[in-house]
Amino acid sequence: MTQVSEAPKQMPRPPSIRARASRRQRHGAGAVVLLALIVVAITMPMWGLDSYTLSVAYTIAFYAAVAQAWNLMSGFTGYISFAHGALVGLGSYAGILTMNAGNGLVAAIAAGAGTALVASLIIGLPSLRLRGIAFAFATIFFQAALLLAVQKAGPITGGAQGLSARDLIPMEELLTVMVAIAGGATLLVYGLRRSRLGLRLLSIREDETAARTIGIGTVRLKLSAFAVSAIFAGAAGAVHAFYLSTILPENTFTLQGSLEPLVLTLIGGAATAIGPVLMAAIYGISQEALQELGSELHLALLGLILVLAVLFAKNGLTGLAANVLRRWRQRP
Amino acid sequence: MSTPLLDVRDVSVQFDGVRALNDVTLTITDDHHFWGLIGPNGSGKTTLFNAISGLYKPTSGTITGSALRQRRGTLDKLGRTFQHPRVFGRLTVLENLLAASAAMNANAAKLRADELLELLSLTTVADRFAEELSIGQQKLVELGRALMRDPELVLLDEVAAGIHPRLRTEIAQYLRTLADRGTHFLIIEHDMRFLMRLCTRIFCLAHGSVIAEGTPDEIRADHRVVAEYLGRRHG
Image 1 (tube, each protein chain N blue to C red):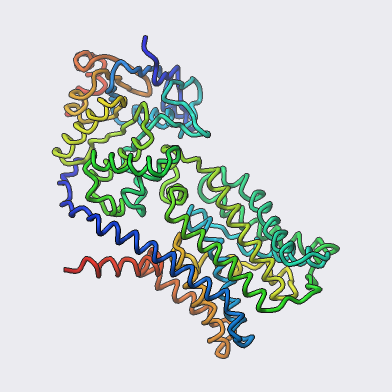
Image 2 (tube, rainbow over the protein chains, first blue to last red):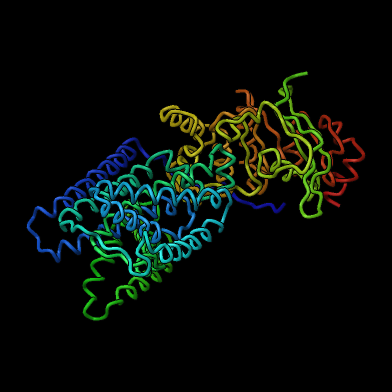
């Protein structure tokens, strides 16, 4: 065994009671800011804004909801899902089918969430018992298989023709519901990051073997996280179907739909509440702002931000901001 | 005979034709607080730890004992550390400990974590990310994390290796304090001074089998141990 001659590092002074209290206050302030943002977003339809602005706000809320859904599973456990686009798509199909059968929006959302939950168990039960890459492969396979199944199940899914919603739902209502879903997922991420349950999920990401040796039931936790994540993705999908009003399989089960939440969360900051919301806003706004220059230009911008984040912000933009803030506080 | 904390019976572990453990039998009881496990590199010490802690399934044999009681499918009364510390790097030191507190209520967990941080002199770095600490401090974090659930038996894999001698002495002190509170330890260690001072009962493994068991003096005098391990270490 190599002897490392290493003296114990110089210990910094312990954080004072005042410092700890101030940290608690900052956490409390974070929750208040988050709640205020959700209230502001959820009341937007009452401000008399034009439909274009509401539509941009809706798009941001949708990206935020799906990114946070991904965050709840992959951001915390480190198990990368490529199936969230498919889970959203499944929620969309279940939502439209439920409403076209004569049910209301709430029933449609419940159906979307429930269907995605069942799908998460089908993907997760075999693959999350294994470690490492098996889950990622299972999600890729699921996405491809689901596209094929939906295309072949014409009598139910409309096949390649897709499905159309029989009733239109006002934009204001869709925005309110999507903000509620995104806000709920964001608050859950916020609470989870500050709870011992969240620490157990994060310990899977950090070192699953070590996590098992301290009494963490990793398989059960991973399955639960994926199930909750799928519920949010499916619910968001059900609402999104009514925003689109017509859904087609090749537009619904796309790789881009699964990569967006992944990239938005990783750039924004995995397992953080604000990171994915921030990136959803940047992505949604840039998508509109760059529309005139080129329809897919926002994807190039996202790619550029991703490269910069990989080079300079290993823990995402939120991690970078936290580091800068910490150095600022520690300056002499 | 005292209650066996750990009873390993005829355990073999085989990987693709390589027999890492070969009918290992050993019993850890509460008669001694410090048990040692020595042997040359590749003798199967860490494999035995992995089998005891459920990371490897034995090819044959049984591993039982009061320290292997399960709670919701996980080992509740067994703690372990790793040869190279496996801390949760992007969690703070305090969070590393709290991650291991599933069975306690929040207040009890915080109190236990604070107590262990103080005992292990980690209070000053409680809010630092574990990846920012020295290897010695990371070993203490890992030890604290393993102790959070108040285990009956802790498997320590080279806890003193590669760290400053002063910290090594401190670790020995911490371990004695913890032993006074009723914790038992099975320790893999190549630092014979550290091990022989601490342990009152020692096993020697070679080629995947237990070749000797005894007190430190008996182990030092055992010609098989000298031939397989002690006599070769500085040769």
